[in-house]
Image 1 (cartoon, protein in one colour):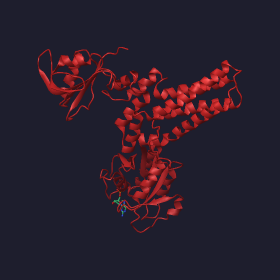
Image 2: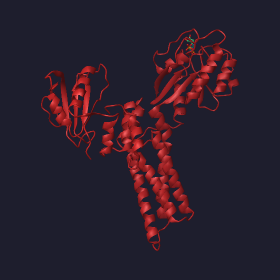
Image 3: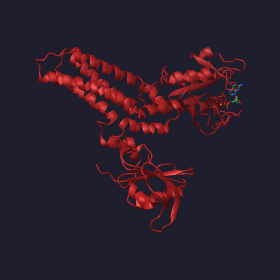
Image 4: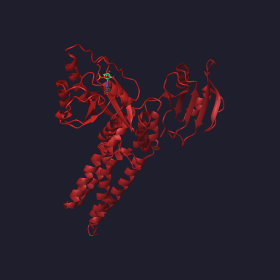
Length: 445
Ligand code: GDP
């Protein structure tokens, strides 16, 4: 299929050391030849200058790589012009490429072409974005696994299993006199359902590795929230001060704890008037808790528990939460048992109890399972949805078969399950879904 030639600046527009203008499409080498004074050769880096052919002006000193189709990122002719990275040089080179027949690429269009031209499947294309946005090494590892096609090949195996069973059943409909032992249908379908459920079971942890877990640190003023945040971030980002609540803004930082990205939200950002202090603390906590996946409720154990403490603990409801009993280096004044919840003693000052707290946070974030292995892992809510749908249809097919329903009933659900699975790899996928997925990419990727 003919596709026009696209161009974009593929590196961030800033003061980078180098910048890259990328072109993809049949015209790419011709456009490059028109604006590049130097010799292009396949899979070599060529030194020269980008020159405006109209004025003869040299725009920048560059290195140009030309990669002939089809062994390229997009499977099309690809040219990458490495220039000196200043925004002006990059813009001028891009403009020249556009003036010579390229079209400005849409967000993610290079990767979209890699998908449309069959180099990668949809799940792999989505992993490209996960690799770019990975927040921790563990998240990166899961993303690269996806890019390698780890999940995709698991899905292909599953589809293969379902297809042969479907062929079996169809044959049975056409040749009812041929006896097929029911086990030949039930066993592979059960096996496929088990694999599906195993994949689904990895999703919650996979998505945490990918997107992180929003963690609210709540508690009344001066209990040590900012100090604790600093400890968890291992750097002095939040301002720690003995004056209650001078941290004016809500602070959001990502802390990498054993590979899990915790997005920590500080709630200390309130201006206190003497009598508003406690109630505002409660109000802030309430808001933060609403948006959080995990709540760390901090109390100061060097003081008796106050009504505000009780109220904030009460806000947790049935959310995933930990009570952090801070300032355990000071004489214990709080009667922790009256909170009726398990708490973890810490000292943000000395660091005592911090590793225990981190362990507990990771355990809660991953639902008790720390899994980063070579087995495929689902890290994308879209994939999880699709897998759940596929499992539902498959389960129905099995039940119908078991209940002795006509084979047509069974094949309808089997086909639906197959089609659902095809949405992961992109074999059965709607145009608008593609648009939504690639709209999240940046231009030039
Ligand atoms: P926030 O208002 O809840 O954010 O509390 P801060 O982190 O600003 O801490 C208030 C005061 O308590 C500061 O003077 C901290 O140094 C002190 N503090 C925080 N954590 C501890 C702790 O574990 N032990 C002791 N002794 N002091 C602490």
